[in-house]
Length: 232
Image 1 (cartoon, rainbow, N blue to C red):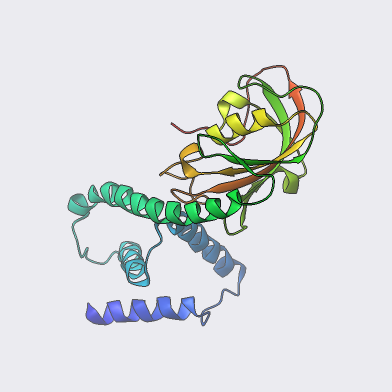
Image 2: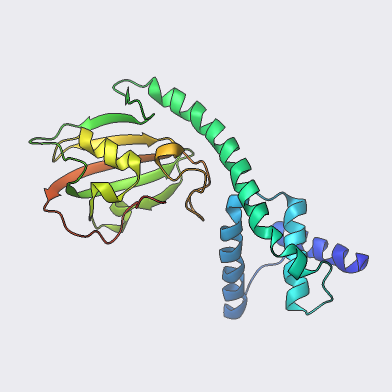
């Protein structure tokens, strides 16, 4: 058993350092399967040691080895562990987010609302501002505090329409600050974005988000198919 664990740890170490590389189409597809699994686990911020036990569990199930723990006993504990880890990640991420927001608040032209929203009018529009119940058509670009793009209608090359009462609070409040034809930058604390749950795999629990949004039009209200919908 100890030898098996050492071999698995050695294999995971080799993979981590690029010693094992996918070559055939099947190998590349299997690697992609691992990527998808890893992306879904990424929000937990696993340490190397923790990841090794996850790999060990996967290996034992695949190779039908004798279980080292009883799944019926520890399986139900997974949900509690996930919730606790999400909370820990959220606390750490919020702390980093606060420092980021404090710095952004000092930029020229940035305003702060009681909710914690920071916004800056990048381009003045004309006409009226939308209300919280209006439907709007926008182009947007969303990034994390490190600049990573997690969603962008600009990159997709297709604007999107939605009701302002159907999205995260940051957008509901922020988009009412800009006129049609204008462009606004929004800094969204997690409390008015996706909160402690985040929106895995791209948005971590407690994440602060940044959006640049161009208000193309204010439309007649009708059901929205997508956008950054508010969570329960």
